[in-house]
Length: 409
Image (cartoon, rainbow, N blue to C red; front, side):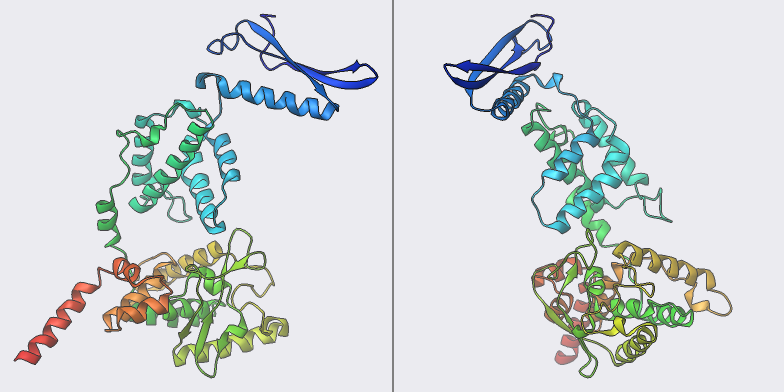
């Protein structure tokens, strides 16, 4: 018996009187601290079918596994991450974010490591690498990763290892150890205050230059810059949502980019729909864009047709593709700077999401009440708006003090 491997077992048929029944036998460690040592046989009988006996055998083996010391369980970070992600019961957008972090910032660096060999030193070193050169976006590979993203990596890794403890792969969670130092909230906030946005003139110059290049998604960029809509909201926009006579866009839905706009479309991020007024120039741009789409196919301008979510080739436009096209357009605009386009020479390359920040910043700088900005952006509460755009408020306070001074003069 001592040479048998724990968990080895089999199912047998036997008769009891005139009745056929089934039983199983399995070998388990005499000493669970020495799982490869002497084994003993355990049996259970009385099953009506072979399937019942086989199921009970598997359950018995699982109980053995749960009692074995952690050191006997071997699994890599990457293999466990797959199990963990498959077990999550969260909002699709949340799971999508977790998968992206695991795919880009955990498995490429830690995936091949044995789960139980992760230590606070290894984890801290990983965070340091991400802060120095963790960016994996095309054109930005090797650049520093934002502290906010590194903190998200920490949160995902710590949650995953919490589950590994519950699954008996780890005795304790190394990511929760006091020696692990993820980015601090105050450092993240300080870096957030450096959020880069375009000036009003840069917005005008870019849109004018990009339109002259016959960019087929120039109108998409206009809507993003002039409404502050989220990327998923723009991709999910349908023609029936746009009232060109009233100059309004109803933000009714957003894309779950795990499955594409045609696969999974839900409510906007805060769970509420909203209406956004648009500029006269945007109304004209949408009319021209709609005419161009109709010239390709009338299918593209039916009420339920996606305005921007499908390209001229009738293929789905993914959010990441839109972001990459925006970045390439910005870099081309920079390269075009010179005698012909001198105004583009200082154009910063910013993420697509910063078009939303650009719009909000311009509204607040123009003196638009924060409550109106909140409603336009679709923030759940005004505190979110005030927190995200606190860097704009000091200049607004200066204006308020100047007005107050004029009143008392």
